[in-house]
Image (tube, rainbow, N blue to C red; front, side, top):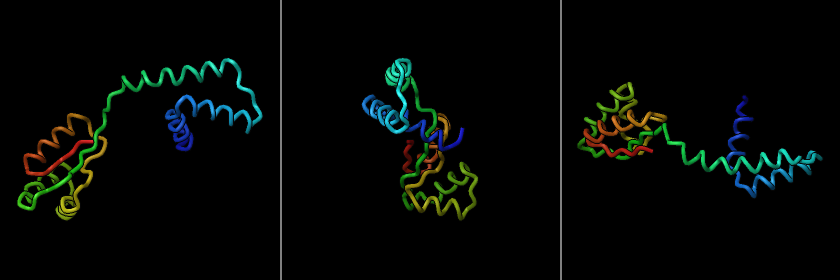
Length: 129
């Protein structure tokens, strides 16, 4: 599937019932088509199933954000950042000095918690989003 189609699908998933009905009406008028009873039933079932799916889904990917590094703890935090990211000294120093900064994107819950613990033990302020 192309990224354009994926983006359209994501937008459609976020529509509420009134917006979906308005979209159907606009499609009918623009393309001179008539929605059948079957597609109307399908449109009614999609929003009903969507909230149930949302409740069951649990966030599986987390971003680890380095919020603040106190000056006295900068060197120890820098060492932890280098070990976690594999960055060179200059890149890690730039990252530590430019807080708040995303340290890791899309990490698992366990990895995020482990990174947070290591960074906090070194003296940094960390947030998992």
